[in-house]
Length: 371
Image 1 (spheres, rainbow, N blue to C red):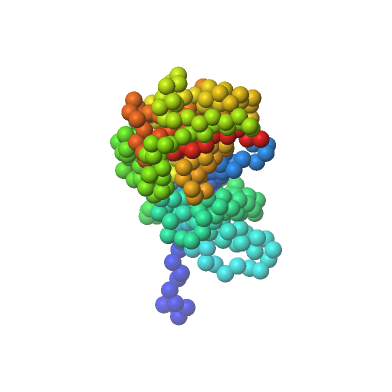
Image 2: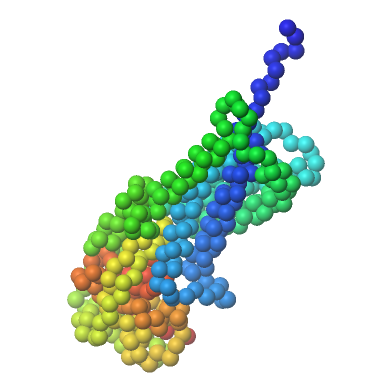
């Protein structure tokens, strides 16, 4: 027997670069998909001057935001596999060389930012906010940190990644859990996690969406995020003296709900697609916005719509010109043949194609052509 003590335990062959590199590929793709679709959602709500978002196809935002949430949830098991594969190395004392410091710093930023994004995104889709910061701003800012750290990490580790991918994925015989089993388990877990929430965006998968916060239930069969009571508009929405003001420069017209109902009505099947990833389609009927604006001699341009709600960051929204003139953009009075429930925006609401639900303003008070 030697007095040197027991031999250090050999690392598991199912851990290490071979697993980390292969798990990192789908994880990196998922991060990039979430980054691009998240940026699109942010730009639609806060458009830069150069940004353009089409009104057609009408389901486009439903697709991009559903993909954002499904991919983010599917990334969680992939991240766990990646962390499991490199866990022993995360706590290794670094050598104080520029390359080593860049590598460890990028890893710390990457792991921290991705965990932050996936954790806060997951609780956001459940509309649970156990923090004091404003989620959209923090989530948007941290996305750049995550992608920047990913770029640095790939640049530093590219030789290691190439070498790891060149190695066979099979583990040595009698080595315990195989690499292939770990990767297969991660892939299956990612697919199951994605399916568990996909049904809130993909109707035919709703029956397997066991973890989806939105099952499709709600007033008149369509979910809601904000009730009339929470918005403080119940009395004003039911006031017999209600008028919808439509204005363009000096021209202005006030409509009662009965007058709106007496105008030619149009029906369109459109989804409410929310930033939390859920969506639900319905038949909406009402007055085409472009026809209503013709009364005040609309000549083009964006339109601002305002709610009876007196506070809140989504009490108004700006509708780009392309959406204003779209045939499916309605001042809706009914949903699936029934008068709008007050929680769906009675007496009337905006419904437009390919828009986030937070911009489909409810309880309309004023429509005004932007200067």
